[in-house]
Each structure stands twice: as C-alpha cells, then as structure tokens.
Image 1 (spheres, one colour):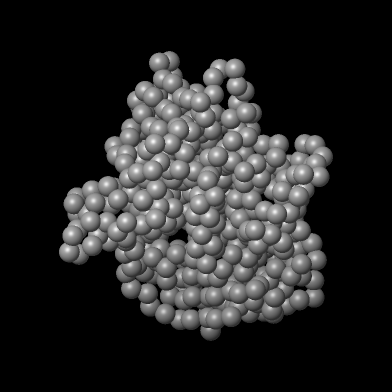
Image 2: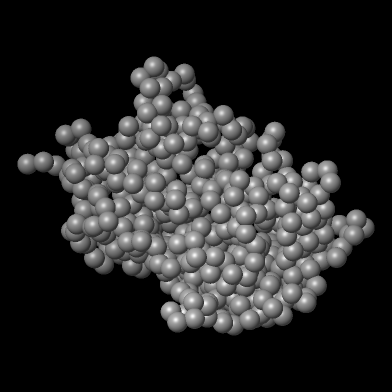
Length: 505
C-alpha cells in the first residue's frame, strides 16, 4: 500500500489563543494536485504553513505525518526542502532585506532554502537553474537588483527560486497576484507543465479563471474548517470576463455609465496632479519616458499596462517618492516649491502591497489605521480626540469593528488590505492612489472593496488605481492611461478605451 506523502489527522492550529484551523483531516497522495479555496480569513495560508512545518499542530490536537521517503516521520525536519513555497510574505521578505541581491542570486538562494546564498552552487545546481530560467523566460531580470523589479517580475524570479531546488511539492499562495494577463497565462501554462513533469501542486487562488488544468482535487475552507473535498478533472481555464461593459449591439457605442458621465464634467475641474514632459530613471535606463498626464478633480483613473511598463513608478512619482529627471515638471494640487512633501502627502491616501509588507509589528487594526494620520508605519505620537473620532467613524463606515481590535499578525492578506484602505482615508484625502488594491482578495471582498472605492469617489475623492485585472475596475472609473515600456500609449475616457479595444479586436 502506497503511503500518503502528507497526512493530517484531527489537527488544530492556534495563534495567540485564537483558533486558526480546526479539526483538519486531509491527505496528499502521490500524483495529486490540490486547489485550496476559501474566503479571506478562512485559513488557506495557514494551511500551507502547517503543511510545510512552519506552524505546529496545537498540543494534544491530532497528528501531522510525512512519508516522502517511504518511512513515516512526525517531525518537520527536512520538509521545507521537499515543499517549496511562493507567497506574498516571501516577496515581502525580499523587499525588506537590507542587502542587495540580483535576480540570479535570489534564484540561487533557493538551493539552500534561505534568503541568501550560503555556499557556491554546484555545476548541477547551476545547470538546473539555467533550465528553470529559460523555462520561465526571466533571463533579462538576472542582473537587476531584485528590489527594483516590478511586482510581477520579482514573482517570476521567486517561482524560479522555488523550482531550482527540485521540490517534490510546490505550494503557491495567490501566485498570480501582480501579473498582467499575458504573464498570468504564461505562468499558468508553466505550472501546468511543472505538474505534468511530476512536481505536485498545492495551489491557493481566489479567481476561478486562474485554475490550472492539472488540478485533480479541490479543498474548500470556511471559518477555519474544511467544508468540502472534491475529486475533479478541470478543463482549460476559462477566459477572463470582459474587461469593460460591451458596446451596444445596435449603435456600437459604450453605455453611458454614471462614472463616464462625470468625465465630461471633470474636464472643467482643477488639476490635482499635472505631469509634463517627465522621465524617471531607476538605474541607467528610464523607467518612465516623456510622460504627460493630468489628473483633475472629479476624474477617476485606471493605470493599465504589462509588468515592467512603469505603472508603480508613475504612482510613486505622483506621491512625491520619486523625482523627475532634468526638464520634467510635476505639480501637485497647485503647490509651489514653498510647500513641503508632507503637505502633499496629507492630501493623498495610498494603498499598495509594498506598504503592507512594511507592517511587521503586532499592531491592532485600529493602530494601523491611526498611523495614517502621521504617514508612518506604526504610531509615532499620541492620537488626538478628534483623530479618535474620525477613526471610529471610518471603522463603522467600512464595517471593520472586529478587525480593528485584532492584531494584524492574525489577519489574512485580504483582511489587512481592508485595514489599509481605512488608513488611506483618515485624512479625507483629495486623491486616493491604489496599487493593485484587489490582490489577495476573494470575490466577495473584491466586490466590497470596489463598492467602497466607488463610495469614496462619490464623496469627492479622486481615485487612481493600478490593476492587471480590467474586470476588477469599479464603476466609478472614468479615465484610462495605458503604459508600455515606460511611455503612455493611450490616455482618454474609459468609453474611448473600450471602443478602441473593441475596434482593435
């Protein structure tokens, strides 16, 4: 009889006295590939950490057994070498490092299982890394500083790192977040080849269109418990839903949504951000080239484009975190050189995965929200009475009462994103900038956040957001700027963009 590679029997997991997983019974047999499904906070990421041995079962609550080499073991010694993991937390760890690593060094670090290269790779290891590099098409990222790569570029490097060690199991936690449509399709095809080549997959996702054809089983978690196991054969992943509403079949025109009607009115509003002839260099090559863009009060912009197009760089330029090369001009809220960057930041709310990765201390949700008053990570001074009242109103408005009292270390990735939205809104900003705000969110949470953004827009705050999933765009979006290779290749109303896309098709 063939032993299961991993076996969980009546396992509980508790963190800081809170039950995170309860009464888990599950087996991974040779040849199986599992999709791990469930809403935010259901326990999916904790499930992967339990399997890898990063978390232990609660004392006296069941057993965790491994049998990768034919003999059973109950310790997790040597297990991480057999189960590789790619996750948002791993990406955050590399972004937070104080030393500089190239893409190739990150890949080679996978041979030792750490974050750095502790010994020179062998000839066989180098050859395997070269094979993985070619398979994933990441050659152009090898010599670049990993912390200067885009979210999607670094994700591909981390996948190469995971596969370089020839793991028996590859665990993927929301692995497509931050990737453009072409990169997602390429990655899913690659993972399917990895699965068919003998590496077993444990695959966490919130998006049905990102399912991998090789998946043989689904496991669904809800409220920390397994609620469904399904053996299945999944066909080809469904195509993405339409990015924007379809044109009228008779007139060929786009429907006049409320957000689009606002576009004509916004043309007469004052500019919040005015960018004229701006290039930005990150290293010897420009990350942005001759950018001309105005964001006016009442407009709500989607910034689109493939990985490495310059979208996040453009957001950092708007925020004042990056500066234009000589000759370029950026005006924010009509301010002059006499105004400080802090006066600018008080008028802008900001959400990004990079910001989320900076919060590592055990703060409550309320403390993270309050840190927005000071544009800091963590509280740097006492919160005033007026600020406490504003915080309480936001918590109630966004239905965050339970999360506000909980440690962020016990929140799911999506739950933490909701807290960061509230943090971004504490000042009542004129402009809300969102870098991939829907990453890590389940469908219900995405819909809730989209509604929240539309509500914020209806109250007078202009929204600028980057996304790789055009079907995530909230109805408030009125304008689109599309970037490619650091240059704007389209700017206009969302209706003009959709009609252009329809005509191009």
